[in-house]
Length: 62
Image (cartoon, rainbow, N blue to C red; front, top):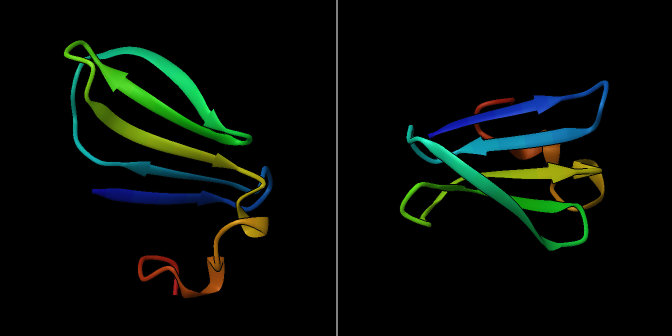
């Protein structure tokens, strides 16, 4: 799993695993799941992340 935060865009990306991308779906406002060819979630993207997540306490960003 890889966690990346883009401070400029206030976007958080959580890659759960490597897989062949199929499509994406916004499951809640500003929260997008990326699905693989088998329909399994492979990544989560969060826009306006600092409004949803405590960015300062993410283990990989501390």
